[in-house]
Length: 626
Image (cartoon, rainbow, N blue to C red):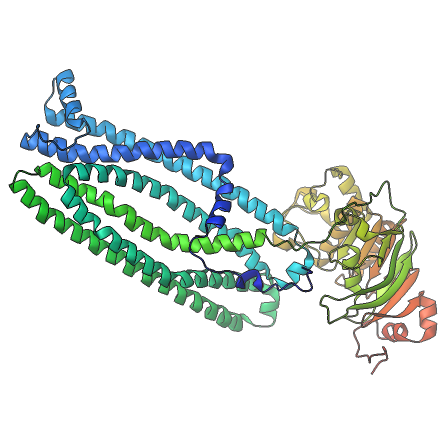
């Protein structure tokens, strides 16, 4: 589907909120495949720990109560050979039965603790590594989405999927691993309970369907609630990201109270959904706790009668009370995990919807290779483009820039200047036959190859975390430290860098706030020069630099543009006058094309902009000043 026709609102609204999607769950498991050995070890460890849990209950009920206190050895009730083991320890160490039982219980407890801890570490380790891989793949996928995607989808919603939603999967997978540890004792306990008293076991099992029914109704009531919770969290993140990233504008416009009011409303919605979720979960947990109390009452009433009639031992009744927890705890835990499961399924849908979002710049099936250094010829041939089908930003724009020439593009705001640059950088798809590099249609080139030959300096220069040197090199193995420093010297950035505490190794804070606007722009020029592109684009690159700083970089700019095809979008008169050609745009249409003297003599739109120092003015549809 074309990005122009794609409904980006479905990036959230397509979520169904289904409780258990086996296909989606299978995709989550795929990320665990590389760590299946760790998971297998974890499974063995939890089986051992679960068996030891049963042994400890046997030691209390059958060994301590029946064998040691009551003295009943002949009971047919199973003891998993623990009475024999206690007797063997008595003989070997010549100690009292109570000490022998205590010694066995002590070692069983140690092994249980070790196995349980090792299980948790291997389980969590494999889950964390798998989700690390998932988060990395999700990040890599979202990095390759085109600009058209981020024009329509809020960054905060994408951040939610990479952070909160992946964390929800962690909670689900960890909970599922814990459930395995609950159900193994459940099965063992059920076998022993049936071998002890079939009737009492069947009576207790009658309560299990009640738990199942309550779980079903809880699921139906909670499904939509948990989806709303995730969406409200996403809205919170989006609002928070927008306000924090634009904090200076917020404070300058004194919007703190208004923004707080908006955030509070979104937060109230989130709180309402969270409270609804908590209330449902509290009612569900209380109901299950009451069922456990009913089960305990049945054991005392029925089991007590069996003891009086010598059908059961006192230890057997105690064993039933201990095993009842093993019988009901997995069901209750499962119910509690449904809360996490609902959230995780919705989060999984969001994550895989993002991973399956196939919008991208179309690359040629048989791309042409760029060998050697480009001559630098750029041609826009009858270029027409719009971000939506019904609105054209550029209409039949044609201009040729010969190798080494400088083209200045001027025009009022919204005339399509920056759009031309974005299309040249292959940030959007457009029809073939409209833009050429060295007479090669750039749609026949890989977008990566095109961008590697173009250096762009924007007015809003982005600073990454790291040092000054890191922000010049940007991780390129082709740029050495010496080359980066030389580039900084050429554009006069070395003047301020050398005065910093640690020079080129000075760490920059978020968005380079410890540098002035002019210093950030100088750093931008150094970054581009170090990359040594054949084509240079300056998009309002000096608009925010003071006159003194601009004088400093004029020589650097001259060296930077030497032997390079350059495209300048600027308001500064001196920069534009040096251009070989000046393209004047208005409402996406070429109004004038020529050098400075030619356009001044025409006394048209360029002359008007020149007279008004290139400030935005109100013009009619023909480009005449109103």
